[in-house]
Image (cartoon, rainbow, N blue to C red; front, side):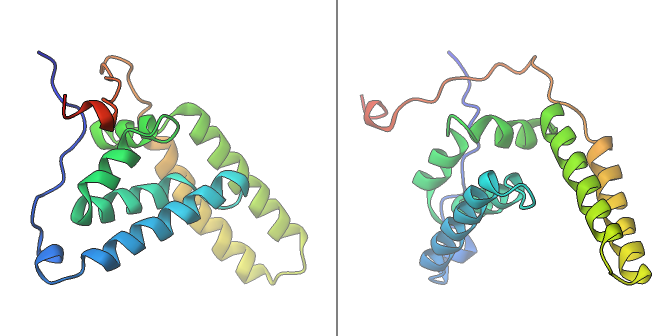
Length: 153
């Protein structure tokens, strides 16, 4: 038999016991929406918001959690982060490029030198953190998710 690679959300979290389930579902969908906007806008990150949505869904909706985690486009990146705390090479390159462009635009603008220094330092720290994350190993065998309509069969 094969093992399930999808992390299972807790059945009754403290959030669900106190009636926060609808708010967490709405918060999760808000983050999915922001993440989808980040697919189109290069300055807005996608994965961070999808990770927040995954957390919110893990506390409120097993169905939405499974859907997002097994999504064909976003699922592999979320899986790599969950299993290995790894960032793919293309995502690292894109993030570092966008941060470099941001620093260049702010430096070329009429922003005060203190603002340029603060932004450069902050993005430098984030860039260092991104570079030190591992790349995902392909030794972890990913299973294709079972479609919802076949789970009961």
